[in-house]
Each structure stands twice: as structure tokens, then as C-alpha cells.
Image 1 (tube, rainbow, N blue to C red):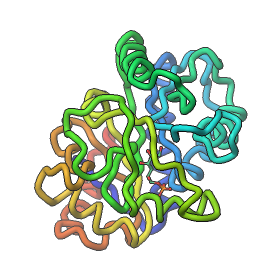
Image 2: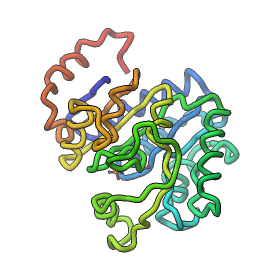
Image 3: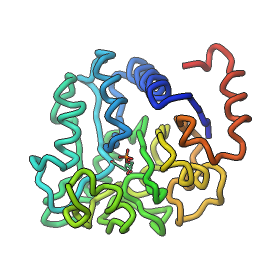
Length: 256
Ligand code: F6R
């Protein structure tokens, strides 16, 4: 796992955007796994400003709220169109987001998995992390081998996401999310976390034991993970000076 600590979210986001840009230019028909949430907003702004060619890319979003139509302002469909897709030349047919109104949820989830496999698998998977340690909406105690399925949000996530819905009671309780097993199959996982609220979840994910109690800790099993942090989110990492040193010593050919 590579841990990149920057003074501010803006600095970390800038380097993450360069990593994405490099991956897209190197493979214009890449398959990207995309995330939503506040952390991604600045990253998508940077990607839009880079004027990359999205015409051959395929995208798969991690998750969607069950019961919200794509047009609902807080659906992840709306988030993606508002923050990214309407500003780039992505082909609509190549955009995949779980259907929150699916009648047959298990079949929809199986199809999502099949479609990811049929494209050859995800090249780069973007991830945020919840204060609960969730990636996608895989809440604590999710199976580390889980696939795309319906999940129930924890009270902690309902409270964290109340800001988008006006109140905690307005947050849908159920979601469709890629599983941890699905995420671990992508070729490169790129996680971004900013702010003091994420510090404990990050320390447990990076330096704690691999445990379903912190789903992001499963990323320790993945051969290629890059974690972008600001100082506040890195605050509880015991080995942060080492990670900083490693990044500073990187040979020029590895620099972003
Ligand atoms: C969203 C998702 C979640 C968020 C996480 C952090 O698609 O998969 O795991 O990345 O809840 O959200 P923010 O960035 O709002 O703190």
C-alpha cells in the first residue's frame, strides 16, 4: 500500500488527478470504478479541467441508494451527472450505475457483476472511506469476499449522510453496493480521505488488523493500492514519517 500524505486536500487531490490522467492517457479504453461523496467533488473538478478524452472509457459506480430514482437530486446518478459526466465526452452507453429502483435486486446485482467481468474488469477503482471504515457501502461486518448486493446502512453512516438529505430520517436505509470482493478484483485501488473525522478509520485500515469491522482494511490484501491523505486524515498513523520519507525518496520515473 502506498500512502501519500499532503499538507492539504487540494494538494492530495491534485496528485490523485494526475494519477488518473496518466492512467487514462496510457489506456484510453480503460474501465474506471467511480465513487461519489464530498471527497470526490474536487477530484472530478480537476479531471474535468484536464480535458481528457472520455469517449472510449467505461465507468462503473460503486453504489446507489435503493428507492431513489436517477432524477432524485441526492441519487448517485444525479451526483455523477452534475459533478462529472455532463462536463466530459463520456459515452452514455458506457456509464454504469446500480439501479436504485430495480424490481429484482439480486438479478440486477448479478448482472452488474457480469457486466464488470465482460468489460475485462476495472483498471482503476476510486474509493472514499466512511468514518465507519466502509468502502463503497460495505459497512462493518460485511464479508471480505462480498459481491454486489443490497446492504443496510449503519446508524453512523445515516448520521454522516444526513447533511445531504436535510435530516437523518430522510436518508434511505438501503443501498446497492459493489462488494469488497468486487473491489479487490480491480487492478488498482485509489483511496482518498481528508479531514480529522477520517483519521481513526484510516489508521485502522492501513495499520490495523485485516478485519470485517473495518472493511477498508481488506485493501491490505490488494497488491496495488494508493492512498491519498491530508495531514488531518493521516494524524493517527503510527508510521506516517516513514510514508512521507518513502514518497520523498521515490525515483523520478515513479513520480506522479
Ligand atoms: C460513495 C461511497 C462511500 C463514500 C464515503 C465517503 O460512492 O462509496 O464509500 O466514498 O462514504 O464519503 P464522503 O466523501 O462524503 O466523506
